[in-house]
Length: 223
Image 1 (cartoon, helix red, strand yellow):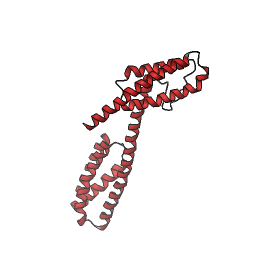
Image 2: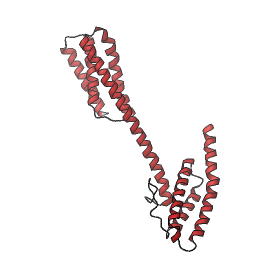
Image 3: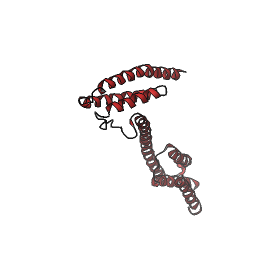
Image 4: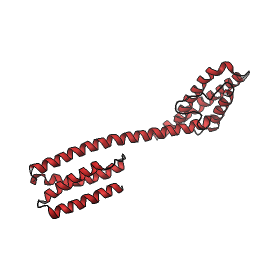
């Protein structure tokens, strides 16, 4: 915002100088102010947010209206310069819009990833499972405890999970079950039976609460 204020001050000062020293008409002054504004915007350090661009564009719209109103009285060279500034601005606007969209998409993705990471941390411990969904930390020796913690945590929070939570939990459960198949041959005696019981408990919880959550969200969406 400080850059924008500096830009506006600079343009206004320059325009005042033109009014005092230029022997041309008011149309010439409007065209010069417009061209200088576009040039200055192009030299600003970009900030790819909608709010920032909106402020810049508001300054442009004020000046382009005046420039358009003065076009009929401008000579050919000044008209050409105004049209060139318009083209430069159009290219700049297109670039900003693309970058703003990319920035917003990245922010949304980061927020989504952060949300899922919180869920992973709650189910398996902080930092144990990342976006790659690798379960290398799970061994034959700790698989039962990992399964027990996972299922008990789901049971404790089953009434608070959203549909998106359950979708992520399903993915995590399947990844954990895949890891079980890798280490299963080395499980201590009795662990396989206990894990089978935990899997049954999880399936019952998911069948009851995941469907109910979806139904409630669908109901809420219609009201």
